[in-house]
Length: 361
Image 1 (cartoon, rainbow, N blue to C red):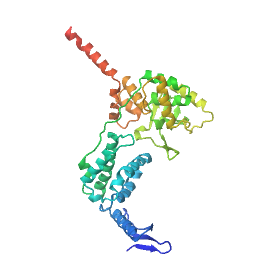
Image 2: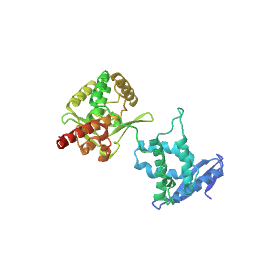
Image 3: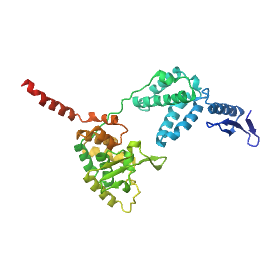
Image 4: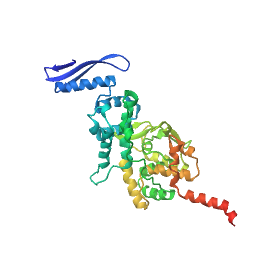
């Protein structure tokens, strides 16, 4: 038995050998167990992990899942998944063996999630409930595909929640101009909002921009990175998707404004972030103030991107052209904005009337 006691420390440790995925024999040592039973339990779970035996616990399988998936995902994406797993899934399924998780277990877990209420007696949103179920199902699907788990009980049960997303709100050009006049008293924030509305960048893409990304001769903005604040540190990563790497043409007035912006930032280097003095919280706070003082409806920061896409649709640009400018992974994403300008329906009806009215006169 590969379990031994450290007489000096009074703890137990495991010394075992295993074969990795390349067929290479390796040795593993794990120390610090308070009891022999704890060491035996760890050795048993490790043995099942090494062999891919689905008799292991859900918690043990999560180690395999993380090792398999983490390098394939962006760090921010994995952070989101890990938070959901650790807070909403693991506490319930932690000690259950993978091959013993049943549809009844999944239903009981779903009922717990559906019954949740926060301090304001508000439940989880339908979209969040669907996200929770999708994550559990993804873990079990991984076990089915790569570790020979017989079936996915979460798939049998079916989803909870719905795909209905929070309603997208937009500002018309008139509404945005009212807002922008209010925030002109804070120039750097004003320039940030100008980019978000007139170019449709994502919030993180805008915050990651450097002077090197602006080509005033060609009148373009290069998008090849995104900014995120994580663990109290500034983090620059690649954009959301491959299609997010793009070159955007900006209107001439915006190019002139951004030249004034750079002149205002004395000593800024080509690789410095233009909007390093702006936090996400600052953007949200200014959005609140500007909307209130301009007497326009309150929308989210991301709704400025929706407003830009809808504006382009209203101007008659094709879905393909808009998808390329916005960095959408596929054209289908672009079509979800089409309903946001109801005036188009009126124009269609009027033109159909003009074509057909002769038959009735």
